[in-house]
Image (cartoon, rainbow, N blue to C red):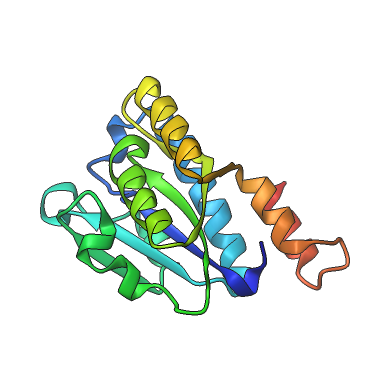
Length: 174
């Protein structure tokens, strides 16, 4: 995984949805960590919003870091234009967001079928119930998605403590 081949996709971290997501404060924190790291490393960030007229917009601090936001009504964001919004020369997609077993899973399955290299940040995803998150992640792993954490991806992007942005990224990780 390299910064030059990666795109971060933040799925449905919306104001009216987040309060009902289990451990939502930590999930938002982890999404912000990886989004800030991606910004430092020049990695594009694409957001999605499920029916924002009902669920509100993504958390403002996340939305501000996104280059594009795909508004959708389908649970699978690809049906509403996500693939068209992705940079064409970046096959590695790192997904975060909610809900793991619905919108994130359906989107990831479509992206896998479209031959993208899909990684799910397990500490930056959530569902209303942990059972749903757990089985969504199991299904994604079985379909070929990599299950990673924010720190795993950050260090894989950096490759070395000699990276010119290492100290800046380390400040976010700590």
